[in-house]
Image (cartoon, rainbow, N blue to C red):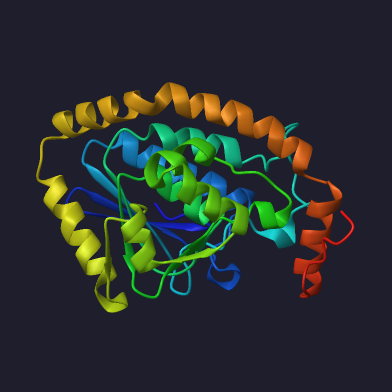
Length: 258
């Protein structure tokens, strides 16, 4: 079932879910949060589906939160878009193997969502970035825990404090991705691995995924409980307002005097 912002294709036990806002570099608005959440829920409920693969429409994986809509869309008391929390709830508990084919830039949620995927493959040209500090914000989606768990505390601190770009080679070296492939081979190689996994029994895949999730469930939930109020305190601060204004005005940000 295709949705407004997410295309779904099912083949031989694999659900290919494509974020589809190419004019916005597949950046998330509330609709895309809801559509991807629902596409994952459908794949979870369908016993003919054993594996899900997330990718982006050509041009990007995801540019993160659509900053052009920040301030216009409704938000929860924690300051986050309405669709964000339910999407992360579904993503973080998805009980089947979940792969990502990162076909372009992954910024913000375009990076942090990968921390919830079982296997991440990247195109050679793809890059990742956690821009939260540069936006006057804090990490999201449990990434304050998951990023340190995957890359180690020093590398996590460096990436978060500097908002540095991470190319495909470094992503593999840090453990953020399992492998990087030439751009033209990315989808074929990812779907090949997904098809290999889909040959296994669903019951064993689900039980294995659940025990993997259980190992980190408590720490992940605690991280999200810490992040949400910190995010609420950060949104609307002078630094955040300046960062969003600079983005909209297409100019360099100026944090001097803050």
